[in-house]
Image: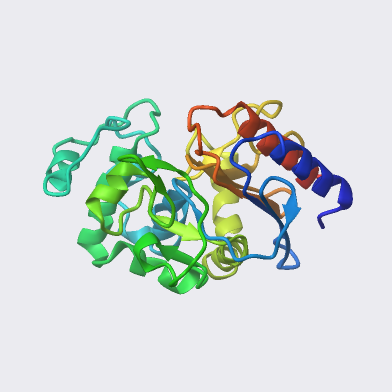
Length: 299
């Protein structure tokens, strides 16, 4: 599934970046097969088990995953929160003691789409109120190599994703609010290997009907986010890569992670990197890598 031309393209693009760690997978949902390819130190092939900070891909696995597993618990307000249409601020610095009060003070009102970590955190609380532990809703479907950041295996290798208070961040969640809160929340907090995320997406499709549930919603979509998943706005410039159809969905993460699934092709791809290190604001080469791998993936 991953030919030599794709591997060469991955090496070429990753070799031009500063972050240097990358793992790529192509998934065939019809045959339930996947293939992975991993590079360390920019251009060296490796089978090392690397635990990447999934960042906002956590939203898709926990919040959207909760909708897949238990759609009956979702009210209209919860759908607005899930789809970033509830009018909550996109971000703000939170404290461990008062974050729940902060995100609970807003009344969800149908609004224009604005991507919002506050919406994700508020939805985390709404789901917890109904089922208890947010992560428990999808625990059975996530592979053992997708874990909450405080539960990583001893000596697990995780590439550096940035700095916090003058120290390198490795093996700890990059997102400051998630780090400060220190609890299982839906906007960030999961780590995973390329194998683990590949198996998890296959599980979500097999056990929760990921593609069959999303396809009709994508055909009728009225906003960018559909049940918590990002969608394609422009077939030419999308980070999913040229060659996908309009029936494509997925999610990106701040640390340089992403996955995309084309329901018309029954195919998907994953890219995991430590793209927020050393310069989180430098996205040009990361996004060039995303688009290039996406283009090869849809062939």
